[in-house]
Length: 440
Image 1 (tube, rainbow, N blue to C red):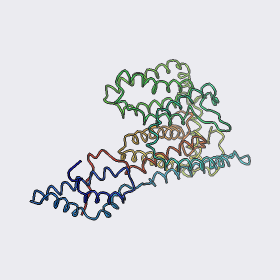
Image 2 (image 1 turned 120 degrees about the vertical axis):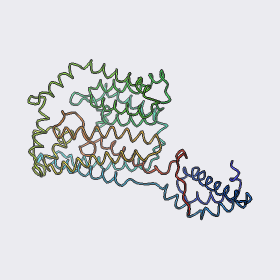
Image 3 (image 1 turned 90 degrees about the vertical axis):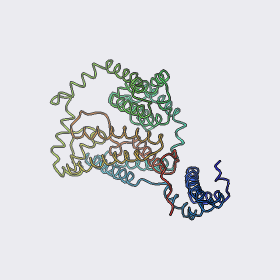
């Protein structure tokens, strides 16, 4: 204990300051910072010839009113809501609702009911968002290992008992719900779990190889067995980014990445015939393989600045409620709408990136990094697909497409990001580089 802490006047001053600050985790850091200022002032006064006790009392007096300081610190460390991200999510969700209503009316009298279902899932997703917003995200960290293991078990179970759609065993049927446990849901759960597990800098080489087999290779194998190559690539990108962010150095990172990328090479070799067939179909834009790209290009080209109108039918565009939703929205509402939607998507991704740049907690930064990787791929790939620039993949964009279960998970993840942002000023840092408290 510092000599200055023995004075009752100092203790009373610190107690009165901290009483005003509701962010209790910050109290220890605030006390440490204020003690440093009082000690510096007392030492200066003692150098001027004052005795210790009078110098300490005068130093406390010079700090100012403790209640006023406490209120200022409370304002600096109070919970915050990221209204910008919330507004962007709201606008994208509204566009998704309008898009599904548009799809309903494109079928004429026999409406599909997608709008009502989208609205239902959106309401449920909003509840998930609010619950995650008020949850202290740090409580999830101790359950990261269990979350990763349970997700892998669900993925394996889906391979044997899941529902096969379009040749891919991605969905686990629970009642009337089809959960993509080998798709978007598992990617988010696995990467968020990785964010809270032991970082690569603490692995060691041989132990790191075993961990990489478990965390990097096993999910890759499960995605490969489900024939979900796009989800495999997204997960591998996330795992690579997470390992790089937590690794000790480049040499360690390079050695660790040999294992998962070797497994990827083996997967590509075993699926060589299928992949070559896919590549040939993609390259032949005039044949059957290039049909979706041609349909997207023709739909976008014919849209003009203002599109063909609300609910305009276009039977040539497949899956207008999911992976081709961008194409159909541009076809109906025109290039201006497409440009505005593209800008909104980039603003959403940029906002998440901005949040990651202001975080001090490493666990929080890694969660946001994982979300950025997944949302970037899931938004940009369908956007470029919608313009006919890249081949079609079975990947629907978050918030805008029909979504269903995906929408619940996506909005819950946004709630988690908002929870992280809410506490960005409420979690103690390492004291190093803390800006001094300015007291007049």
